[in-house]
Amino acid sequence: MDINNIFSNFETNKVEKVDESYIEDKLTFQDYMNHPLYWVGMFKKLNQNYNNFNKYIIQSFQKMEEELSEDDLNKAGTFIIYNNSYYYISKINTKDFTCQEALFQMADPELKGYLELSLNYFSGNEEYEKCVSLKTTLDFVNLILA
Image 1 (cartoon, rainbow, N blue to C red):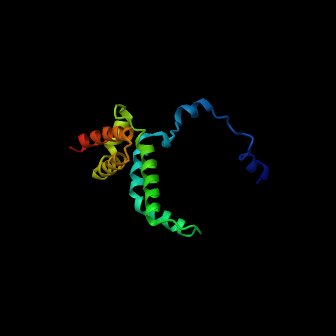
Image 2: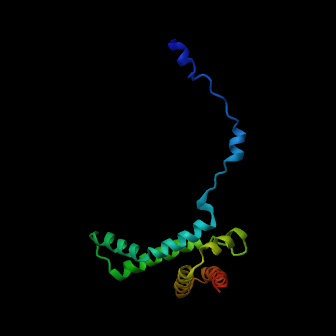
Image 3: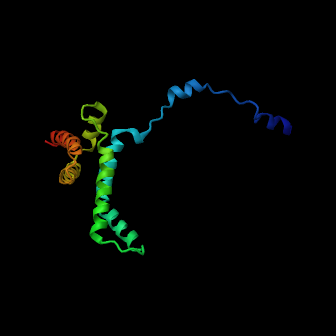
């Protein structure tokens, strides 16, 4: 048995060149952070974690030397949650087909409730520009759920 003959079958120099245009055509990558499903999902997730975030804020700031009231910390946590969640839901355009599809997939009573809570928060703070955007999305979700 010739050992060189055996190993000649495993030559590493016989690598075929892959056509890169074929790979680009067949593999499409999508940035999911720029997709309406992600935006609606993040809106829901931030609202779901509202209580946990407020507890975290209170625990973090209680370790500081300077005393802060729990009420002020709750207000700060509420401000952060609602403004961060609004950032995501404000990207939804109910006239855009992709956004409509995302809302159809994600619409449930929970989403409706979070939209209503956000609308109440921003109307209480007299941020009416945000209310218009939230109301438009809430109306669309109500149509889906009806």
